[in-house]
Picture 1 (cartoon, rainbow, N blue to C red):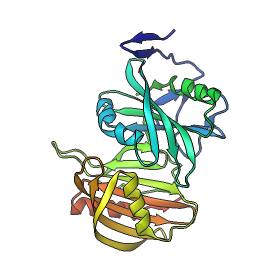
Picture 2 (cartoon, one colour):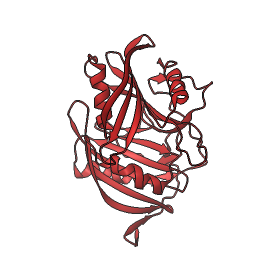
Picture 3 (cartoon, rainbow, N blue to C red):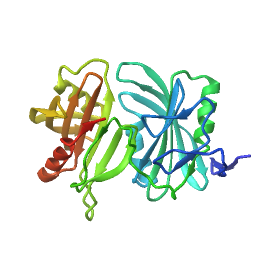
Picture 4 (cartoon, rainbow, N blue to C red):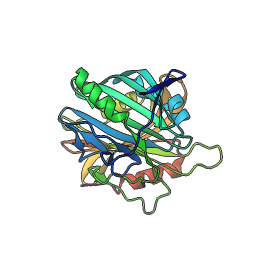
Length: 295
């Protein structure tokens, strides 16, 4: 039976033949009944639910302090902390609530975070119907997690797109579904230049790319202050927009500059969001995005 230590539930998972290794990650799980390996993201899915793996090189304590507040409370997500755990000696927290999709639908969501001094692992769960059976099944599955550092992380090859980093100074630092964060090596105490590259499903073709960028800015909890420039682009045969925007944090009030590129076909948008950059770093981000190929 689980023990209680300082209000944290202690869980000791033992690796057995029933465990499934989420390919390309350092995570192993007991897959809930009715779930199978996902084909478009790192994780498992059923007809009405999904569990995806998010890995970050951010230390666990820093992730909890800096990233979690905006993850659990933003324009689309409302979650609260439900439980604390020690899972095979690793600290973990469970958050639970709801998430709105881009088309206005509301899903239930669980978010389990655990990690070490060097990295964070999250299990991101969405499910349409919040029955007791469904929630217990998902919770049991994610609490069976085993961190397997011996497994080599690698980018998901089923992103729906690819880019060429062969001549780049950027490298992948984390991934969530088809969204990947890339960063340059840290130099001293200077925060490294970073960008997020992602694909999002759309219901209708984008007619107003500037409005779409403003929506992205709102989703990442910033407000636009001034558009430095905005111009049309064509990448992989798709029309889009490139924008440099002066922003201010909704909560922090701190000014920052954001660099955005978005292109679109009839089903998806492909977007780059860059920050902490100088002119040279921004140009390299642009060159990388221009290598994007749909697949």
